[in-house]
Length: 293
Image (cartoon, rainbow, N blue to C red):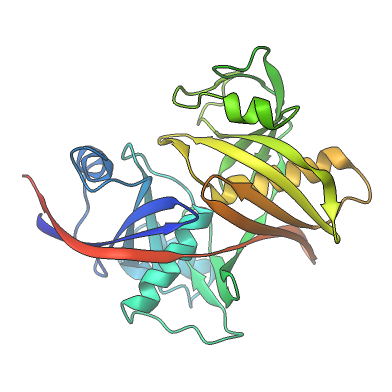
């Protein structure tokens, strides 16, 4: 491939390598993607995002069928080079990238549809950065036991699907959350066939303030490891906490992650409940990287 012209960006510390390939001509192997994401020998990132016009990618055909205006597809890969369905922080940074490159426009009040492997996701600008409609969510019915280093006793998790699979675990307090060693992947029993992101959550005291629910979260992402933030994970954590809290729990949540804070909002639609994620998206620098043959 030669030289890769890239941009580095992040959403609450969840960082990404982004590059434009409108014609879908610069496909990289999983090995080379993992090399780019390596923090010692490559550029370093939690994920890699290729900007491809939907019409030039096989996965993009379904996006155009769902919404003919979904011109751009977020071709997303985890740090180990594996394919991922969607990324809540990544899609906000992807939107910032498309705007910065002059590939799209997004005026206040307008909606930008973006193709992903989880379906088309609509993005709008707001005061915090961008809001993305993550679509419908659901409880999977799974309640695996979760074991993690420095967690003395295995805890039950709650399985949710928010475009990507998640298991959320409630902890007793900040001490338990802070003492976790997520450098080693937590173990799920039974383990999902396709794996899952695992979120560990502690409610604030009080849980609800001014009508907004508040939680802290740390996450281990499949194919990556511990990250400073996970957008779909924050949504899953808020939805799980609301589920546990029962009737009267709010629809609006603030989720504190090591990299900052994001907002989650559950809302009703004709076809069922959906969830939206809001937060910042920053581009840090541009560069060139020589990819070995």
